[in-house]
Amino acid sequence: MVCTLNPMTTKPLCEELNKLNADAIAAFAEAKRIRRQRDVSFHEDAELSRDGHRRIDALVKHLLAGHDGEPCPNGDRPIVRVTTPAGIKTSRENLNATLFP
Image 1 (tube, helix red, strand yellow):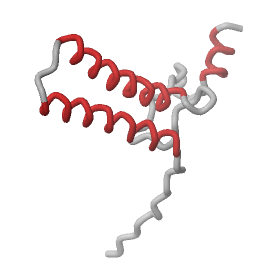
Image 2 (cartoon, rainbow, N blue to C red):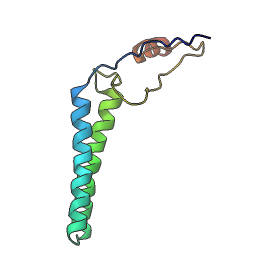
Image 3 (cartoon, rainbow, N blue to C red):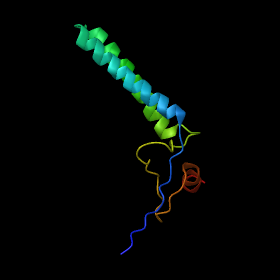
Image 4 (cartoon, rainbow, N blue to C red):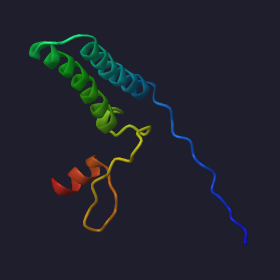
C-alpha cells in the first residue's frame, strides 16, 4: 500500500493581517498587565477593554472584507460564501446581479 500526499499549498502572506493580529494581542496583554499591577477604576477598565475591542474589530473587519471587499485569503478559517439554489458558489457581485436585475 502506497500513501501519496498532495503537496501543501502555502497561504499568501498578508502583512496587514499579521500587524492587526499582533496589535490585538498586545492590547489585551497590556490591559492584563495594568490590571494585575494596580486596582483600576470602572472607567479605566472600560477604556482598557474598549481599546482591545477596537483592535479586535479592526482584525475581524480585515478578515471579512479587507481586500477590496473580499475576505482575507490568509485567515485561519475559510469565509463561507453565499451559494445559489443550484449550489454554485458565486461572488457577491454575481449574486446581486442575479437577484436584482
